[in-house]
Amino acid sequence: MKATIGIIGGSGLYSMKGFKTHEEVRLETAWGEPSDAYIVGKLDKTRIAFLARHGRGHRFSPSEINYRANIWGMKMLGVERILSLSAVGSLKEDLHPRDFLIPDQFIDRTMSRAATYFGDGLVAHVSFAEPVCPQLAALAADACRGARVTARRGGTYVCMEGPAFSTKAESNLYRSWGADVIGMTNLTEAKLAREAEICYLTIAMVTDYDCWRPEHDAVTVQDILGHLSANSAAAQRVIAKAILRMPPDRQCKCGSALSHALMTDRAAIPDAARRKLGLLVEKYLGEP
Image 1 (spheres, rainbow, N blue to C red):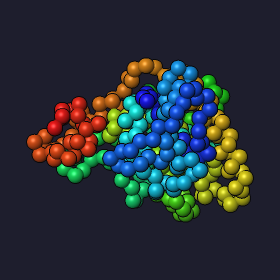
Image 2: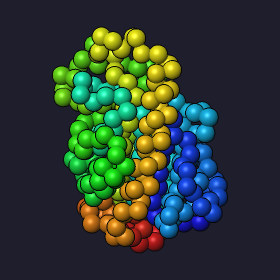
Image 3: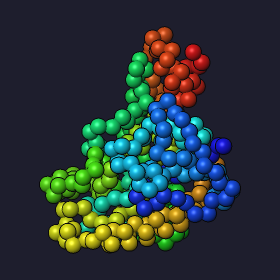
Image 4: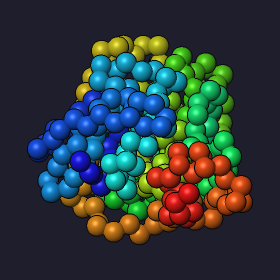
């Protein structure tokens, strides 16, 4: 079963309402198993695939997620655009819990993740100066307005390793850099989606302030769960609006990200690497 749009849900968003004729699709990839089955079906008239990033029941920590399998599975299903939803902490006083941010930049503070499909004899360096699809960013900002969700377009997402949260020194360091929110997942997805030539967008949903704020310790688990629930409901309204307004054609460079990225001499590429990465590179290299 094929889909053109992928939705990746994070903490507090493990399913999508409004699916029609949906079914679970379990995939095996060359990179292992994705976090869960893809829920594939129709939202309005558009075929979409939903994946719970942490697995249903929140079984995988950010460092345990098989990001390569998750994005590869989307590619196998024919997905061309991914809308990724993620719970984040705010690094700015004026970014409140239940606000959404549509970041256009990332800072990588991860340490132990596989964040590329390339290697083993086939080298590629994709452009990542602008890590978010501008067409999707504009669409998401418009959808937030239509869904009456307080959202800001543009900003920087710090992606930390986790699973522990930041120290106060780290949190204040990120603030001094001008970063806006902090999370543990989305940069890795964005890098892999770019290599897979899939348009990618993060909708960062604020659940609380990071620990830089003096009142941080007064926040209760019940407070955070309440924000997660409200954010989940708002996110589903935003996604529904975005899909209704999604243009049929991509008007960005995401779909040709590998066109000038493959560095290895064609004659030197091992057959095993060509076969393993065929889904991405066959259109540039041809069959082995």
